[in-house]
Length: 169
Image (cartoon, rainbow, N blue to C red):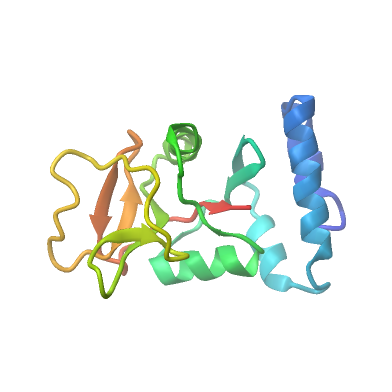
């Protein structure tokens, strides 16, 4: 299958320095520990156009799929991760680099809380970093999800729009 064949490391390891290679190998080992036969994981990583970025111990990766928010989140969770959500400027830049390479806006793992009306990470914690585009968030038309523009700034957006999937592991 796509994971046990070493697809992830074979395609990317020659592009990475030792530190990043070690992080990627660690990610590969985490993937191996998932239940065998996880077809969703293979589906996520079987794309020919995977782009990734590494910041510290976090790996951000996109398979290039353009889907709605719920589908993007589900795809990332099935692969053992979650939707990318920058917690600092360096992570925001790493995600932005992937967005720029695909030239597509991407959903972030940030949503408006039902009770508070405040934007939070999808795990419910308050945002530790923000990079809103000018005059955003504006909540036009009940926009509860967040997308990243190609310049790295954020916009609140309806969750049924089709955007690039970027996961974090």
